[in-house]
Length: 116
Image (spheres, one colour):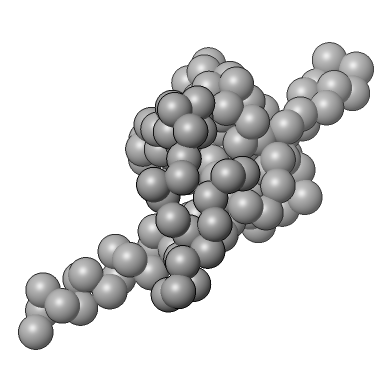
């Protein structure tokens, strides 16, 4: 990535290329759906799950879960493996958990500020 660290230890977003900006935007669009966030949350707690097991845990139909997983797979948020007629999904990498935790911290921090 072309971004460099600033004096405050944060990435300098002015150094993003147009392609990087588009990819980041697409990732945030993908993560902007509550069902997909729930899938990420469940997958963060296990090594992998079949589509049926995942659908049950996130309380979606198998068809709806498959649709959401397809979007997550296209944006490389999840990876899969086939075993016979079954497909098992897992998180693609730990970067997603980092983003997820930062977003949660941000929301919780803002919730506290509004209560004061």
